[in-house]
Image: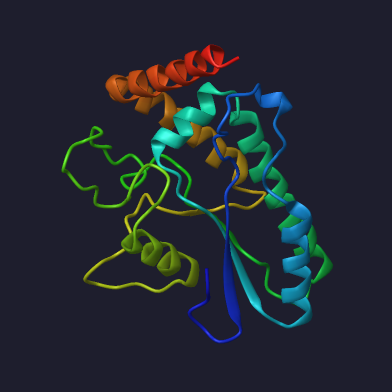
Length: 208
């Protein structure tokens, strides 16, 4: 993701990618490369580039898949590790502005958009499918990251929160509560995810 101002840039991070094969969560490698992110941070410090990092807005379906596959602890650990990485970087550069981390991967009016059934002609407003968000969502991400705004298309109030040592615990608590509310209020969506996972597991068993 490129920057809107000269001398600045932003990079997206995704903390969980549903695997093609449903292996136990403990056996799957953690997908976020913190060594790579650390190198980007170091490069931006060296070149005096104002870096911003964002956690991409996975649709609620993806979050439910992560939960049911046991990936939730890895997601929370990844967020804490990112916060810690940026905190340690800020301590090492007391005369410079801290690089901010924004999370868009929560349950919001954007990420909880209803997914139409397969074969239907309804088009989602925010996503092409449950994995890929549309350009208008990308614009909102940039608006939040760079503190810009458009009167004709403002960023939804519940979309995007900055993660810092002082806010990470509350942010994780809120997502857990929002997830419980989503599971309670959207039982059909949750049942769909559960049945989809079960079908994939049965298919894998059939080919063994």
